[in-house]
Image (cartoon, rainbow, N blue to C red):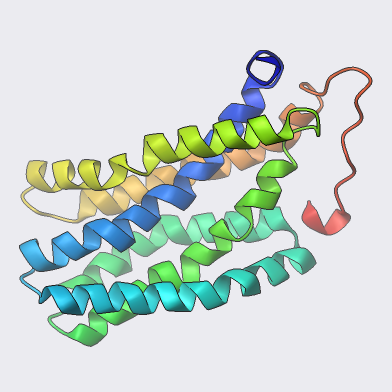
Length: 213
C-alpha cells in the first residue's frame, strides 16, 4: 500500500512508459499475422516466417541497444525508440500491402527487429530508476503488469475493432500506435520531475550514472 499511497505518480509514469513497448509488439507480432492472412490473403506460413525472422533479429538487437544505452543514456535511446515506434506503423502497413514475401519480412525486421528493441532494452532499467529502493520491486511490478494489461492484450482486439469500423483500412491502427508513443514519451518526460516529490523522507535515492540521464 505504501507504493500506491506515496508513489502513485511514479506508478502512472511506469504504466505510461510501458504502453509503447507492449502494444506495438502485439500488433506487429500477433495481429499482423491475422491481418496478412485474412485481409490481404497472404499465405499464413509466410506471415509466421516473417514474424519469426523479425523476432530473431530483435533478439540480437536487444543487447546491442542495451549496450548503446549504457553509452548514450537510457532515456535518449528509449525516446528515440518510442518516436520510431510511433512512426513505423505507416511504412509497416504500406509494406504489408505489397504482394511479396520479402515485403512481409522487411516489415517485420523493421518493426520488431530494429525499432522495438530500443524500447524494450531500456525500459526495465529506466523503470527501476523511477522508484526508490524501498518500493522499487512493487512499483515496477505494478507499472509493468497494469501497462501490459491495458495496452498489451487489448491491442489486437482494438486493432480488429478499428479495422471493422474503418472498412479494413490500416491508417487508424498506425495512428493508434503514434498516440501510444506520445503517451510514453510524455510519461518519461514527467519521470524526472516526479522523482523528488515522491521520495520518502530520510530515504535517499540511489545515484543514477550521468550516462543514464
